[in-house]
Length: 380
Image (cartoon, rainbow, N blue to C red):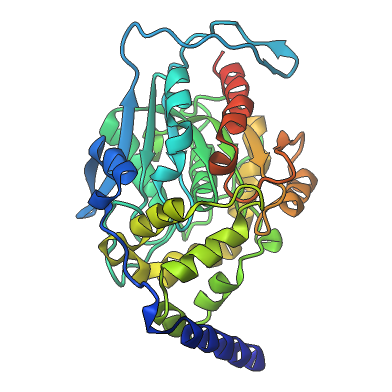
């Protein structure tokens, strides 16, 4: 391991020297990028533990008719003009990006739901990015609490979840909390098998306000044994190497890393990468990159809890669908095979073979086409 770390360190230094002093560390301000400026202008902030959390919140105008569609789920034909889905949809983004990942599907989802909500987790996007903070899914100011508190802040009690990457882990924790509620409290059928809770985990007091109606997961590390992080993520998890990687962090490195996880036919344009980098480095967020990756350790620590949530959800009345880009080197086809091994009656849909880690960006119309019949069927 020590020899491997030394070799990796030498490689990083060599690339850094090659890049030279011309490498662009900084990023354009978000108000200089029209797409980001428009996304931010339609958003709001709420206070979480003294930190400002950005979120987009769309509420469908009264009387607006949904578009006509024809689709099936479980061999049941959906109505040609389906009713608006009454309960809100929460969109949970991944690492290292932000709620802006959902911009390509925002309008179509807004046509289907009464309301949709897309927050930036603490440390991401337009939200605050405190340095030295213990970023976590469920330990010490957990990210999962942000979703519960935002739900309470907006007055919602029942929601649908659509999550990606890091957001999948947050969704798993929210499912675990929901399944811990008494059957009389949950908006789901009772079941005789109890959910085992780790007594060392402090569950949010807001959990009783939060009922999960359905969950759809895009590519993410649902199982630590099948998660394959890219090189730069592995380096950032090495305490001895992480400071050096962070020192040379720049848009060029960011672009190279992101290009690894997109399909060959769906690579991001320079302008799109610039938007991602601007949001990532906003408020000096790039300085926290190694701290934000702690969730990978949590996936190992809390594997039993989070996998149990997937395994028990269906029997507790929470339908789960997995939509996966199979070309993803991190959590693609190999992860879906493990999912099918561990989850009874798995609902797994594979996208085209050229789709990688970001389905909602690489094939947004297909993600919507595959998602809406599922959630409409669950909402009946």
